[in-house]
Length: 165
Image (cartoon, rainbow, N blue to C red; front, side, top):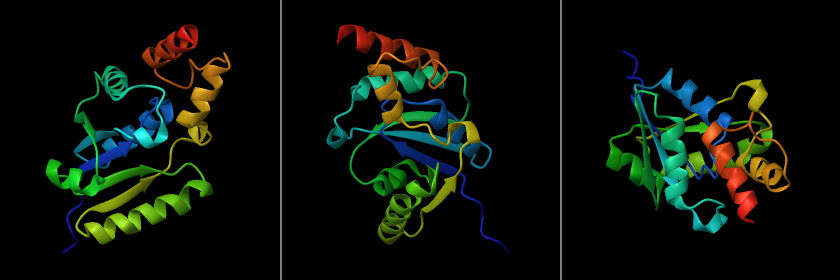
């Protein structure tokens, strides 16, 4: 008998801001898991452009019509958050080989901390392999067009941030 597939995944990240690449990974995750909780890290170490509340609001707006998804804030160890939520997997995206070393180290440490919680890696659609929040922030700050890279509400907030300087 094969082990049961994980049913509930945590998709952790800073999401500063959420991009269409993040959403692509999330939708791919929903094809594998019955429920996905998007876990938004407080992550003050990264000096986010958007506050935690803004990032939560942008995600909730972008996912308003997406069933089986919950958006919650978290701090501390993601595996402890996963246990508290009753999740049995962590969902992570891999865009390129450059992501792999860091993600592998994190997955192995998470396994050491909680060997009952699996890390599942998914690749985004080819059109998003170059896309990251930091690239979006850089393009938006320089006045570039980001409408095709992020949900509409996020693009508007980026324009407001640029205007307010």
